[in-house]
Length: 405
Image (tube, rainbow, N blue to C red):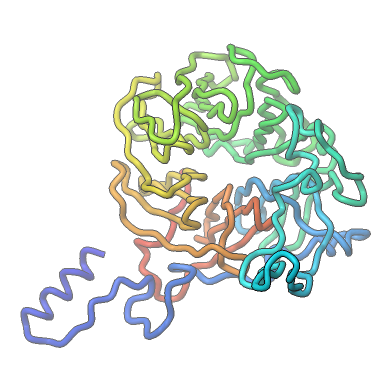
């Protein structure tokens, strides 16, 4: 970006007519950068109708996504929902002469709201308050699947559906040669560690189904991050307001954080929704999202406060991603944008639009990048995963960088 600005300055000094551009693809004529430096990969993943007996079903609230490779992408969702077509717009003159539903310009389907939206959406363990009929209003199946580069479901980890209640995020420790798959279930207050093939549950942190705030319990945890020695950090998270640190074997080391008073609490170490955690392996600094107060706090690895920066208002920093080039990326729910900051929190770039069309976003809750540079997003409210490939000629500084591997 700086080279681009300098080139313009030199051209102006030389008397050459130029048009200053900051488009994702330099020199682009027309367009609006609706999808930034990316284009959407059509029909990825393929519909759930690819599964026998699921022709009338579709994705539920997609909570998490993780790309182990371009041909092995984990998609985590809160069960399945009936496949609905947009209904015809119907006027309601009895309510108001100018009112109709659904409004054609806005999403008509929200995969994450209402007692019939998902059995994992209500109650302390994910089932309390469920008023629907399983098999009719929802199917608690295929909570975790693996999708290949063409969008085919190649693995279905249905053997673990029964222990999930509101699966929240999925990840692999980048320093683990065995590539264990970790799933955080916030309504079960548990963090699960599976073998890479999904055949064995090798470890559970927390007590499944039992909330708490001590060395052996969580209360609605959210995300994970690791140091190079596999020291683990858990953001804990929706009910608790703390970060929990474990050694490489899962032994509790310490926790920090206190309840804040959103939406404008700037006191160090206070949180409302601890909704993301990332660790810089070089500095060993821990970056934590305080979602309800629209800020990122920075700590040393033992919880000593070092710094913070806001993400602006209105803002809901939903996903925090640290790339190997030490850039911080945020998926923001309120603005429906993917936002880039440098490692010290300086704003650099953003793109994105709210909507249901391919490339638009609604409540991005997971973000991952594969070794080929493809970007994957998990959307809770739209109830879908999306795959984006870098556009030809795109400014590489605007591409979400490779993960730490």
